[in-house]
Length: 244
Ligand SMILES: [Zn+2]
Image (tube, rainbow, N blue to C red; front, side, top):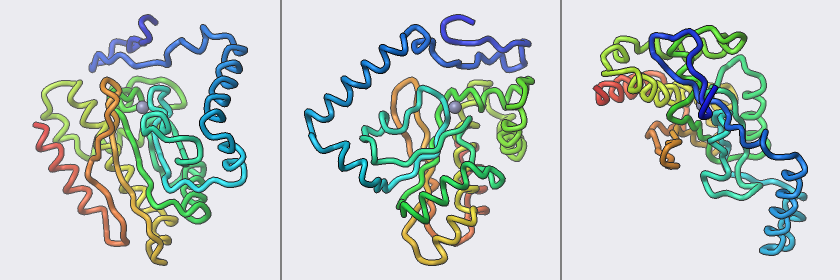
């Protein structure tokens, strides 16, 4: 391990280097973190004395963020939002799976109780989970999780095979994975039921550039019970064709 990266252990065909968590926290003492927290809280109270008292009474976020667990993609910070403004679920490679009770429970609570108006699936370029899925190198239990990304890749393999190099394949798969997860999200029973009863709710797909800090809308928003499957499939194919 060096320079915050881990070489692909078995020299995989893609020659990928998986990004690993920076070692910053390890270098800090836990007491330092508590001191930083106190300074942060003091700064907010100086600007708005009743901020935490108000927040303690209730949360009313209008937005649910489903993002990657990657330490470089913190939802609040990159959108410039304060505590209380976004409900968050994160997992490796921002997947929305119909068998994941954790993610589904977050979505259900956000939609049915908090009544969020938007759910954004946000991926990011250089995603280690997506790269590992493409490299198909064994890493243990997480391989089962990453199979879901490999399923997306296989569905559009003929397009991915035409891309010029592995970097392009990873970047495009990061985008296409978001699109596929937005489709999964739109098809959940929770979201479908919300639309059927006329609740105002839209789902979106964004992707974040780790190297420039910019969020990009992948233009796959959906907000009604009309079938998303065929339109998303066509959208993904067109997106991949444009990348050739
Ligand atoms: Zn990631």
